[in-house]
Image (tube, rainbow over all chains, first blue to last red; front, side, top):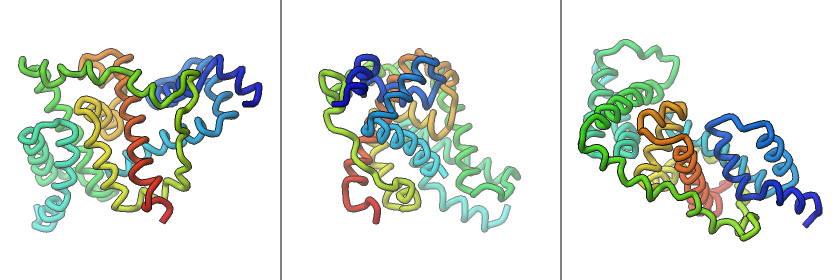
Length: 66
Length: 193
């Protein structure tokens, strides 16, 4: 694992990210949360994918109710 | 009102029932709100043709459902209707998806171009299936948020739950739906075709 990711993992791991990504759909994140989330997403392809999928869920629910 | 509109409205009854049933988990009540919605649609003049008929009907239905939930909340029996929520509040249920160090146990799969799925009828059937699999309170809360588009503080007030509980429920709903769609659509034959 690349060292930046490893260090970042101590601050915010994928499990934390999954929770923040969901919370982001419902509330404003703190500046710190936003920063660490962005940073993590920029180096972690799996979480970046997860985030796109959670955004997609909202679009899908809109379409579902149309 | 014209027989045409009446017939058009009837075509949407099945869809409205589905939404109401998921939301209320009460067949009789769901029928009531759908009936009220169709009656309101027939007697009203609100339909401008700017949005689709279905969108307009969904808008009316949302209000009827909120009213119904409010009425239900005032009934003494309702504590039980929303009583069993504790079992749906465990955020650690989904910890199995992650390793000890918080990394993904199984990484989310590549969904290709998911937007393409939105125009497919079969995809909406899978959505139905996945929504029905959610625990009752989780489904109700998720529908309030994503279909009725209520703000989180409104939902908390309606259901007298804390913001933190609400976030946990919404997280569980999204994790579960994501996983269900991945397994039943994006990983299978349906995707990308």
